[in-house]
Image 1 (cartoon, helix red, strand yellow):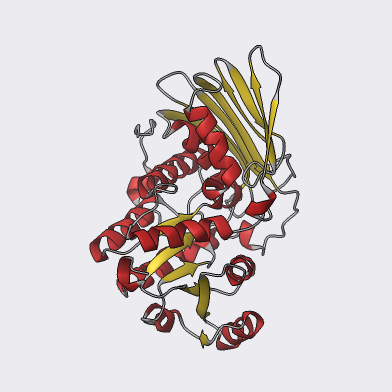
Image 2 (cartoon, rainbow, N blue to C red):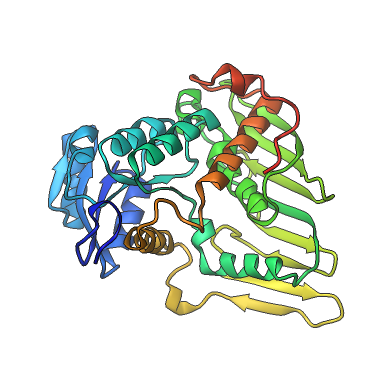
Length: 351
């Protein structure tokens, strides 16, 4: 196999940076892919790295990030640190010449995201946000139906994602230093869903309930587009929601009853016709699988691509601009936010 950045082996060789729950779930899915191989893992704790390596049969365990970044036998690194560390971890790997799949939210703000994109382009490396929702076959089918005009012109998008909690003050979701709050951890999904179908909004407004630490416990946002479309989005770490979504058009609607970011079915309602149910293909694996985003990364690497058309970098930057604008409206600040982020203009630039 010949592809980008020395990807010449029959199997794509992965490195995993971090050893938490997301890293474990991703590694478990990679183990089940015959053309993928996890060859190294890194943590700031040598003991944690070794325990992770033993668990998944990984040959090399590093007690620091730098050693993983400099391992030339790695084709691509999956960055699964808490999102406050994404800029540092992904940047280290890109500077060392590694290709990178970085967990969502991509970074804390658009400035950091733009820095990573610039690094990837400077070094000719592949970079992608691990927005698994975009790679899900059923979500891709939903988007294709919308793009093909199955429900006419999109008028409204509604989506929610909330967890019941309660989360104590010491939890990472309550910690501003870790980019805590509902918006970046959960709200990125409703925002990304709206972007997937409508692109970047022209304007937005938002309201939130903040914790004593200054992160959002729940946030509601209303996004609008120049063509007249609206999106009503909600996220919460203080109440469990249905995690459903609906897209209404001039000639029908699509309802995703539950788990819209990893659906097992959705229903298409077209004016004057019986409802049509679309269900996940069992051959695609469990809906909770990360295999589809891993397969997209490996496809792109083999094709010599430096970004994925399914999760394009300009789309990731647009989502980060929207998240920054929502945070500006609701008054959530993180260490390292630039003045440009804090003083974001009221309208969001159109895509």
